[in-house]
Length: 168
Image 1 (cartoon, rainbow, N blue to C red):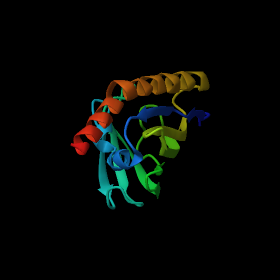
Image 2: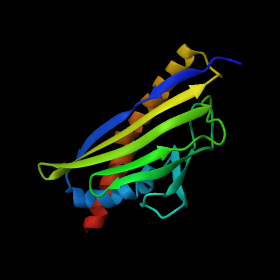
Image 3: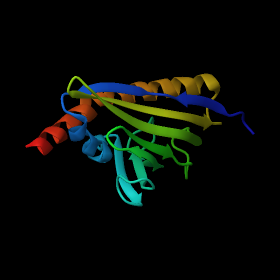
Image 4: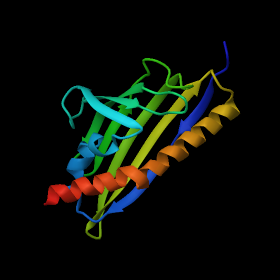
């Protein structure tokens, strides 16, 4: 059996919105509305949306050379107006070279000068036996870099538009 290569998947995105937490929080709970796009397509497949126990299927439309790969998360913690946490569930099938994943996706919010600071983090460990350590590190670095670019280009502008439309 090939030795497993490990990659610590640790992207962290921080941004400030010119809206109070009370206006931002409902959109964080409905994150699929502003994350969905060219790369991700999340949908609730179990439990109630925005409640602990909700299961979310996330189709990654483009990841490396893979198209249509799914992974699942479960909402495990909600602190109203402060934190929304999802556990990444075991893969049902490989996701590109990734054969196993364990970790969490977390949104943290706090008010600052009348606005809201939003911090999104994934804290996860990925495993593969398909690539050697160096190749898997490079793969992870490239994928995080590509994903981080989506935040200012797509996700944050969509989130801002939803908040502004809800305020009208």
